[in-house]
Amino acid sequence: MDPIQKAVYDTIHKGKRSVIDLADLYGLTENSVYKMGLEDSQFVKALRRVGSLIQIQGKSDILKVLNSRAGYLSVKIPRVPINKEDENVVVADYQRLANETVDALMQFFTDPGLKQHNHLVGQLTSITEMSMGIKKRVEMGNQLELLERA
Image 1 (cartoon, rainbow, N blue to C red):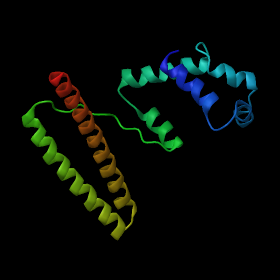
Image 2 (tube, helix red, strand yellow):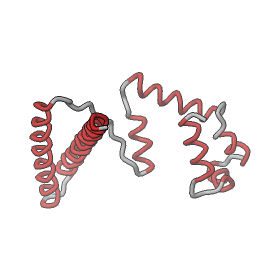
Image 3 (cartoon, rainbow, N blue to C red):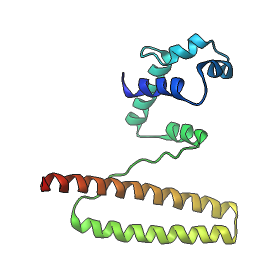
């Protein structure tokens, strides 16, 4: 079972609602809901195409919309520098961005308006993206060090 089919299957069969409830919510038959999780279903095929489309086009707007509707955050993990000199730049950039984000948060709480809201959301998104990139770098570094020590 490929990851997309497994995710669909698990969502249908291991989620909060029963297949009967899902069928009622979507106005489908129980059989139709069961078939959504099969490898050759149009639903699974469409999700595979969406995943490919996102990769090919390099645009994750579809994913961001779906995640937002479900209450999740969608962040692309950026490429991060590997060499030691660049690590100092990453630390300085992260500190600068963290300070700017805290400033934006304080401005929003002091004078909540649309402009401050949009600026804060942008800052929070930027710090989240940078944090994920640094996390990836740390994990890669730890794996390399562990392999070297073994």
